[in-house]
Each structure stands twice: as C-alpha cells, then as structure tokens.
Length: 107
Image (tube, rainbow, N blue to C red; front, side, top):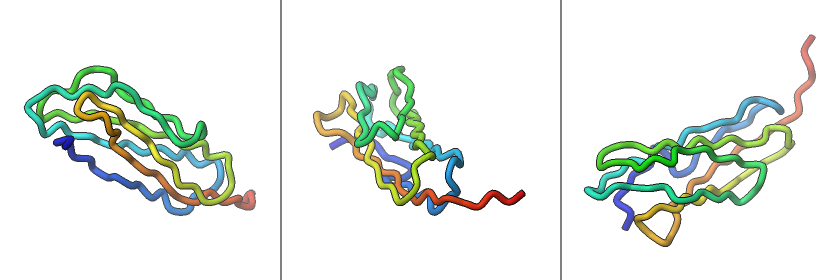
C-alpha cells in the first residue's frame, strides 16, 4: 500500500491537567521511490488541529504532522486524524488519546 512508516500510529498523552499544551508530532517517513505529497488532513473533531508542510516529501525523507488538541475540555478523548496523500485514496489514520482533568490550583 502506502510504503510509508509512522513513528506512532496512536499517541497516548496519558492524564494531563486541563490547559496543558497537548501537542504531538507524528513523523511519516516516505519509504517509496516516489515523492510523497500530503494533499489534505481531516480530523474527527474541530478540537484537534493538525499542521503540516505542504511541500513534497522526497524518497527517504520525513513529513511532520503536528497535532494539537484543545486542552480546555475535561475528560477522556480519543481523536482520529486522517492524512490523505497522493499514494492512496485511503487515508493514513493516526490517533491521539488521553484524559484532561481539572486540577486544584496550588497557590
């Protein structure tokens, strides 16, 4: 299929206090001889914001997809990020999950 490899397909942030910066960098490596182009990235929720380079990724190089989660929501989250490339009509599915919990302010 893709001939790409990802550092993590699912990243677990664990339990974090509310409003902690919740960002993870997925690294998609192009193992093909073709040039990889990320055409679009969609997410299962507006609370998840992906940023990525629009530049083509040459053979052997890595595309970075930075995913930020809106850390102002309490509770367990599990979100999917769909990465559409020129390699396939099917997206690469990445996941982030974790729990945001309210904390007492320690003065």
